[in-house]
Image (cartoon, rainbow, N blue to C red; front, side, top):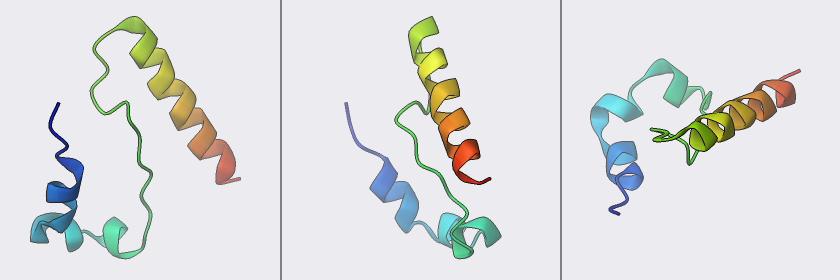
Length: 54
């Protein structure tokens, strides 16, 4: 499976986003969950990120 993240992160459209400039990003391996267990993993990762913001 190709890794498109680094290519995306170099694009001007991404690097000029206000949230990118402010470093308000959270990475996840669950970008496009393709099954129920992946969707649960995405929700768990999101919960962990939101909990860290408290």
